[in-house]
Amino acid sequence: MFSAWMWNLLSLVFAAAGAIIGVCGTLMIANAYYPNGVGSFLWSLAEFLGLAVTFQRRKLYRRLEIAQKLANAEVRESTLMGVGLVFLGFCLQLVAAFCAFFGTLGDSSGK
Image 1 (cartoon, one colour):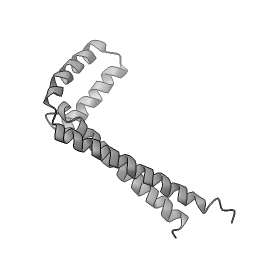
Image 2 (cartoon, helix red, strand yellow):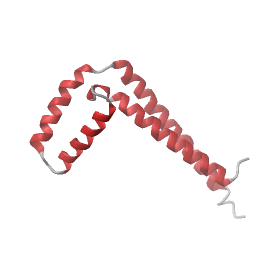
Image 3 (cartoon, rainbow, N blue to C red):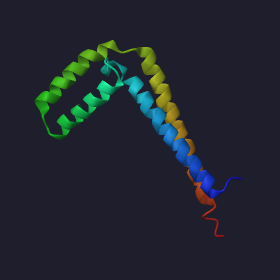
Image 4 (cartoon, one colour):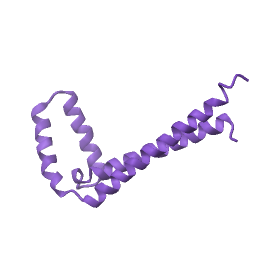
């Protein structure tokens, strides 16, 4: 029905869409940890990872204490919608895997 390049293109589109939707869902799940917006969350995440990589445990534990206090402000509706988006993202990536498989069938038919 489709050519191999079309299947491969579809797999790329579905995989990218699944990844983007999954990231959005993950941000929705973590809604209690960024009360000042997504940008501040991503900035603090980079700082948190930097502290973890450089083994600055005292500062890292302080960040975890702050995050634990913020976790009480979770918006459950947003968290549940985020879980749904993560699931949808995984489903789209599964569709991408099938498209990539169908794209390889034409190459392996021995023609």
